[in-house]
Length: 227
Image 1 (cartoon, rainbow, N blue to C red):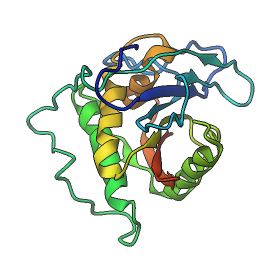
Image 2: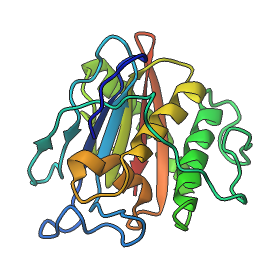
Image 3: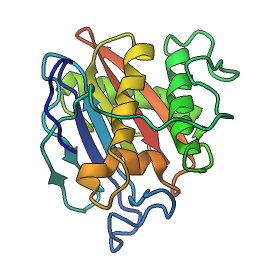
Image 4: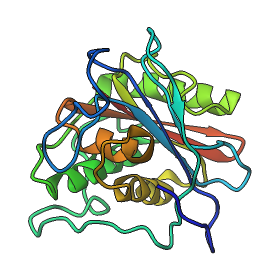
């Protein structure tokens, strides 16, 4: 998806994937609401320092190919699908799980709740919060920020797909919903380079998501790992 940026800081989306079956196409994922991906990871850059370059699609590090596309989205023109009336607003939800001393606890729960809010609009079951992989996901985000490479540590936590928001301003509770909104606004489609974030968020292949965060040079790298 490409759009011209008019008013807001540059926001870049990237995607990479692990194919469950190397002989399956990138559209094997789900059968509902256009979620077609076989898995993947993606990222959005909301920073003003150009932390991430063009959108990318990275395949299974065990052997599949790597694809890339270029483009950015315009946060002023992206749209968000409204959740059903019975869906809880993730900005008002409270967490009943997680580490109470975790500085990113609220952001992690908001991350899971927001993704599940979008999934509910398609009648899809919610992703479980993958708490066991959150610390590892933090480490991935810190590594990617240190190397300025979105998805540079992809696969380290055993995830099958990953979305990422690299170099966004803080706090995460404010910027993360904007990033996820842009990802969802890609909409359904078969081209993983163009629709990878949406594919991962709406997939029926995965059952859980771990959200990782790291502050690097005053900017936040925010990862969503799917399995």
